[in-house]
Length: 326
Image 1: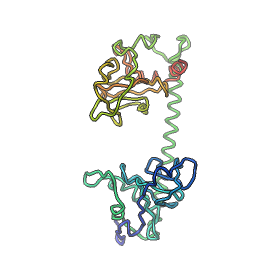
Image 2 (image 1 turned 180 degrees about the horizontal axis):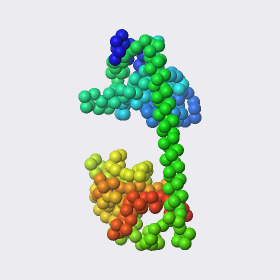
Image 3 (image 1 turned 135 degrees about the vertical axis):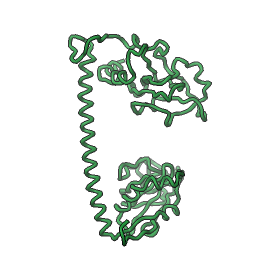
Image 4 (image 1 turned 45 degrees about the vertical axis):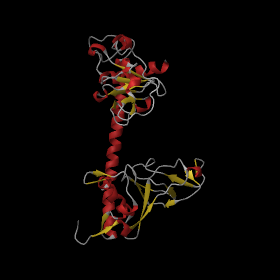
């Protein structure tokens, strides 16, 4: 820290407003009253997103440009308020005084988010108003704060452009790859471009492990069971690879009659209800887990097809069109 910079508590340079939730009977989704935010659900990179709930009974308010902090697990994430809102117990509003630039405050809290969440290895489930007010923050002169913010804004602008370029390159790569898959996985071999020798046409049934048998999973997963059997539901298929994070756990006895869909790891998981055609790969840590009805686990016999190749094959337009048509 530079010489001449004072270190103050957050309570000395800002006002902290702890949220308080109104009773549920005052909530509505019609736009009556003030927008109500309970926690970080609507947080974006910087500015809080549009509300989904309003309240006609106002408890604690945040103003436009207040810094909103999540104060219940997770603790520390921040966003700017874009208008007057009502805040629930999962949020606190931090209102900058004339002693501190609001953007300087935001960037400081953003940088030190992990230190707010954890202290000497301990993770807080929540943080209260007094703890927020006692956070130490360097306070250079306002002109210096604004100079620092300008530098950071330029840096973040460069990062945003680089990220946008990377996303566009990724989209272009996906389009190119999809085009190649479409040509490679054609029904008419004489029209195929890019295939090597030794390709064999067949149905999924020809290459799937007979022990898997393309079976449906557990019909009723049952109630949550502490330290029980991990169960994968269609709503869990949100990424290419699925691990144990966030999975529901059920009574292991419920899975005894569903040995055909007990996972050993490295299966493809095909959603056949709701978001039909969504594919994920079960990681090795899911060995012994099971799936609910609506998911079909796919294992290939004799290592004819790897899970990674199978993933790209089943997510290709050529195969997805067949899945959707059925």
